[in-house]
Length: 549
Image (cartoon, rainbow, N blue to C red; front, side, top):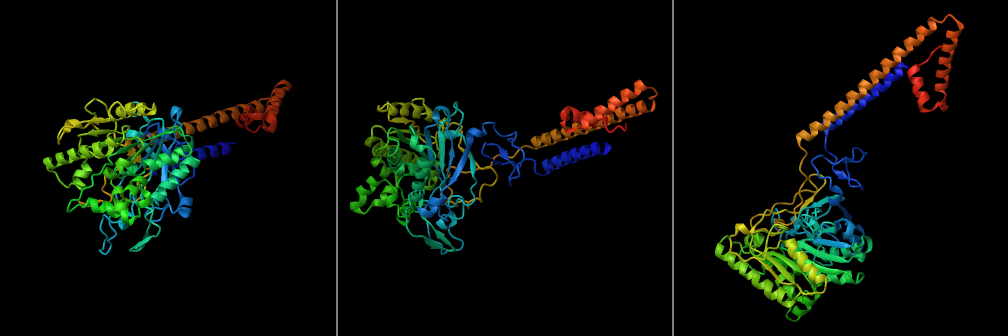
């Protein structure tokens, strides 16, 4: 029996030692997520199911599951630039938001060159883009953490969408989801696919058929930067597809920083770059069909890739979020730091949004601010009427949902540039991978690059656990080991004392009464060893040991 107890103690000590070693070697590699939303050790094998101490307990509210469109890649050509399948992430709604949807086009600029005669290829080329995260999904994981801004699950920060279904449409085609080119293009050692609109079609199919979008009551189509432009380009198509199965659903748009002016700087050449996208990607059937029909007679259908040109044809109500002094546009489109030129740019932005967007549909509205920024400043900026973006959206959406016209189309703030007082402290969107890195980084865009330097929704790794958190975890395991060792020692001590007492009892037995007592003890041991004795009997047998009677 001594050997049995020694073996148990030895196994316990070894288990504790291995636990300590595991924590010391890789204390927080529990970065993948299982179906219940718990972090588990990478590479399988089970392991702890506890979120790291430095991560929010609301992980189940921020977890988004990825859906790769592998079948659609084969049957519909829904492929990224490099030929990998399209992908979207979905975070399910809860409570009153189970049938409400915020669908967001990811941003990330455009690829505007096929000129790969140089080595290496120009950094803004489609070739280079196809090897990074904005041209491929080959390194994407099965889940993401979506939080912050209009993705936030906190009703205090995001009263509009905190409990809605949140969908992030991964951007990997380089053309704002507009391309529908039938053939591939060989560039260097790669076959490039320009199939952004095919990806979008497949995403809508899958959401309607498999994710519950067919039962939607409220749908907001959004996007940031190049994804904001995609919202202008595809909003009416989204509404058409959703209303084909959900007749009573209210579908609206909320493009963020997607109203790019049609402007040609001699160096930046934004106009010719976006025109290249339309023509080379064969985007004629991948943008608003009414706009294409209007420009077909003059053979200028390429104009429909620009927000200011397509806006007059958008019939689905939208609330645009836009800075007058969009920091990406003033740097990459206007290419100027001159205050006078930037103020002229801001005036032109307001003029075009009024004339091409608001004047053509009384249900449209715009939140235009004078903070020099690009993309999500949700819940931080205020218009001249004292409303933040979510407040303005809720007020506008409430009127639209009741079939009424908005109280005002203009939530503007028109101070001149620069206006530091016009900017709040942004609570930016966080699209966090579950390990670092989620995929290889894209090449940085050079000054003037219109490729991956767009400034849209960058994917960033979660912060590393602090050394204090690691040390605390190791201490906990060590203390548990010590308690197990002390328990084993106590059991051994009790066993030895009890057996010695029984041995002395046998030696001193001289009369029949005492012998009967010892025989009764022996019977107890034999009964305890009987399989039918149960847990209590087996415990008694372990403590009493073997008594030779």
